[in-house]
Amino acid sequence: MAMMYKIIGGDQKEYGLVSAEDMRKWIAEGRLNTQTLAKAEGDEEFRPLGGFPEFVAALAAAAAEPPASPPPASVAPPNLLESDYDLDMGGCISRGWTLLKNNFGLLFVGVLIYFLIEGAVAGLGSIPIIGPLFSIANLFIVGPLMGGVFYIFILAIRNQPVEISDVFAGFRRAFLQLFLGYLVPALLIGLCMIPFIIVLVIDIVRVAATAHGASPDPRMIIQVFETQLPIILPVFLICLIPVIYLQINWSFTLPLIIDKQMDFWPAMTTSWKRVNKHWWLVFGLVVLVGLLNVVGVLLCCIGMLFTMPIGLGALMYAYETIFSSAEAQTG
Image (cartoon, rainbow, N blue to C red; front, side):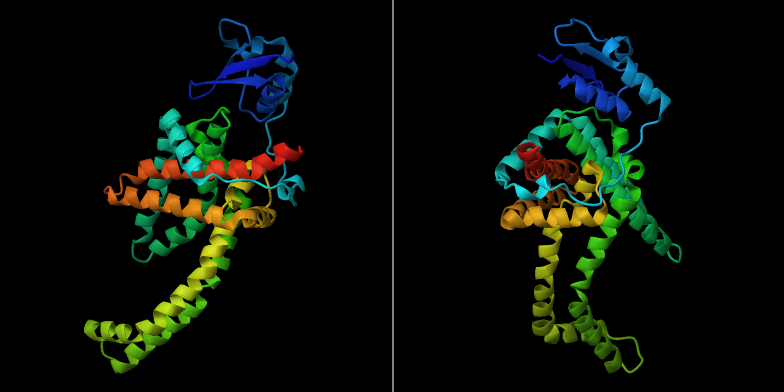
């Protein structure tokens, strides 16, 4: 029977039981080192990993060559697309709550860091003249940052060593792919709103023309929009249909990039194909998570720091069901 091990992670939490193969993998990835406390199954006390003869070669190899992320995959593994899955929406929410309870400090602080950074960038973006520069800079930040948040949830679910600093893992593991994995879907989804924007611009031009060069009366603007609402609202709702459809299909693009080191386009197509097997189930879960976050907003917005981790945990449990289970079934 293969020997199993327990370790103490950087968060001072105990992980395991873990196989020797997984230990060597984590050593190669730089997640474990000679000072990591570990003990073999049956041992009474933890001791530095450098004292285990079976890992001396792996530790020496890791020390000689800095850990490098594997190159992004240009195509999705076939077994990621073939198998079916069953998604329990309520179970995902329940497990997300349990995950937060068991890893509260890590997940709460991770989400807090995300809010603080995005909040700071949004505040700087409101500054006259230079504000747009910060908004543009955020396009380069938000994808890798979101990828890092997903990453800490995935590691926590798998009971793998994880630290708060892993919130920024997206910047070192797959910066370009996460940037494109956020930007490209956002642009394609935005194109769906062009008909609504055109109708809206036409109405704005009509209001401006009615004012004959003067500043439009706010009451006039409201009156024009009220009269045009039967046209504007249906156009908006029609445009919203493909927006929702695409958003749900590409929900797992960033987790696939950060977790499986895929290029952004294979990640988008893989997410699309897997989600489409049970689109309504994934849509239902996203709606539940959205309602959960609405409750957080109603609680003076502070509640979002608690509801968002539960929702993210639920989505990442769904990710594990939809993608990792496919590998387990065929791998």
